[in-house]
Length: 224
Image (cartoon, rainbow, N blue to C red):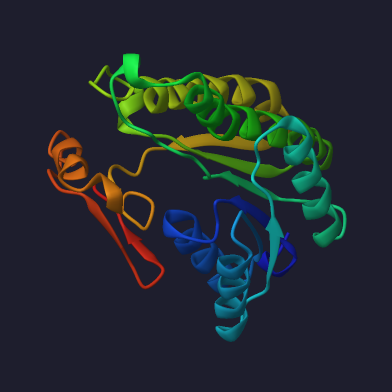
């Protein structure tokens, strides 16, 4: 299949790593469908992609439950003329703090967006990819999923779940031609992580590069 006919669905695609990913895929001739909560940012992202000669659409959703994930999948299939070739589960939230300070509301929000939304997007789209015999799913993870660190009970555990789900989905859909991978780009300075201040650099100091990645002009520079 040529890039011109490929469709990529990117959650959290209107800022940070997601937006940089959308810009890059669009440069490769892939039709990108970006999902986000902010309509203004969504339209801006689409306009920038189109101004650069790419093809893009925006779908507004908070991805807070299975129904919203299924609706996003339905809209993406419709915009993609019946198929989605690439799913990038990038949207996520990451409140940091001691376990005893986390509320049930925080718990529900983190697991709804970080785990439940990817789960049901995959449930809707992976079988269709498998039926066509090809497709790719990329899940954004984090170094915090691999070890215990103070203040990362919710974020780290939600991404640890994603790491395990990545292996399960690879086992379930890989034999039918669907590639499933997780990537951990490392601590990256974006609009969303700006509020972390020096906490982000302290986390980055534990990575091999020793510093955080940067998101500049739609391109991400990751620590490895």
